[in-house]
Image 1 (cartoon, rainbow, N blue to C red):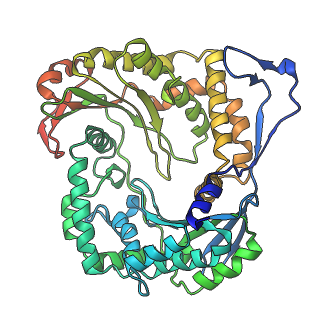
Image 2: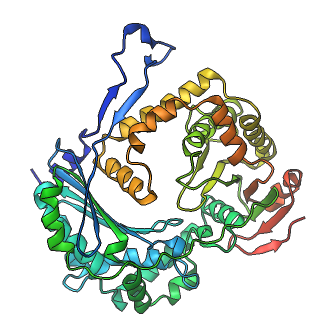
Image 3: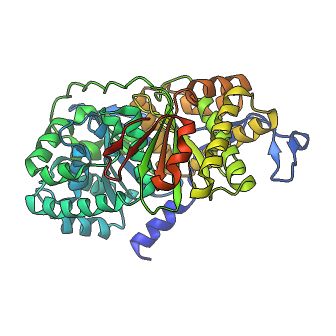
Amino acid sequence: MNRSILLSLLLSAPAAAQLAPAAATSAKAVQRLDRAPVSKEILKVRLPRPTFATLPNGLTVMVVEQHKLPTVQMALWVTQGGPVTEPGRLPGLAKFTADMLREGTKTRSSAQLALDVDELGASLEASAAWGTDLSIVSASGLVEDSDRLLELMSDMATHPTFSAEELEKYKKRELAQLEELRANPQFLGRERFYAALYGEASPARVAPTAEAIKSVTSEDLRRYHADRYLPASSILGIAGDITLEEALPLVQKRFGGWTGKKAAAPALPAIPKAGGTRVLLVDRPGSVQTEIVAGNYALARTSPDYIPLTVANRVLGGGPSARLFLQLREEKGYTYGAYSSFSADIYPGAFSARLAVRNEVTEPAMKDLLAELKKLRDEKVPADELDDSRRSIVAKFALSLESPGTLLNLWMSARYYGLPQDYWDRYTEEVALTSPDKVQDAARKYVDTDHLQIVCVGDAKKIRPLLAQFGPVEVYDVDGKRVEPAK
């Protein structure tokens, strides 16, 4: 069988943490409510614990053993190397650097690197997600190819060339992609929403500017790479059919020569104080729909409110059985879907609710959206609805553990954010025991209806007169320039 086909089959097969109920479940503990049987016992999830080592150069190595399949998942997290702490003059520099890692090293051209990965039937990627302080190099493949995978990861992460020729090709692709984004109402709404929250601070960035793409040079990339891609600031995680004792010599062989002292942690951006409710309208002439995003600040990942807000968000808009979907789509037929979500990182992330509606129902959809936000704050969630939401979170979490990549990400996150060692062992129980009072407290803190930032993307001629009732309206064009001050 072809190696890549075999690997795809192996990686898609179940391989997971141990799941066990807190105690034996009797038939009496199961209820049928016109859906799948639901146990009243709390599902406890026991994740395999990672083991750690540190190389002499300061690189942290973490291994999560998963011996059901002969595969490995690998991830190198370069901390203090993400967009949220990059220099302001070149928004996108961290992304450019990560993207260009695959475009050639000192020993391989981009074509040769791609060929070597393909011959293994493996994957090898690099990214730097907006709003994070991380650049990530990841790989997956058969465990027998672990040494080759680590060699390819090391070559790409520590010996890129950032050739001027490849950079020019990359710039053309990025400029074309940016032009496509600026025609997308969802992107325009997200861009304006994050700018409303974070102003000029780096978390506001959701895409590079055309000026940054055009002006970045190979030397900019080399300097950023030399300053940020450092072993003592990085974590290398491996999950799969391998032990720390087996992995460590391979990691030392491939990453032991990586040098550089740990850089001083850059200062986190100052987060502006929340202002009063306002409406930011992005004028998109001819649009037949209004894209709506409404919300405000959420919390940092280490906040004790993280789990209560997770439950509150699931009640409000965390899926097709949540309130926003049922009310705005199923009951009123305003939209194909209405959801809410929140982010949490080393700084306070954002909470938002979002939907797209026909122009003619913009006003009633806005009123119903705001009513649902207010209801979550003002009223305790009924017991049955809260129970369904908590169980949904626990079930989704438990099923996600079938993926070794998910396990790796969970433990890497715990290490990165400094979460307690037993955090994920306690997670499902804490979700299951989240009370109505805690959910309401979280909603009152983070579903802040007195300081909502409401973004609408649509045809200003059709929807502008409707929006003043919801707050002062500022108007922007699709290039992000303000064309009408708040009034």
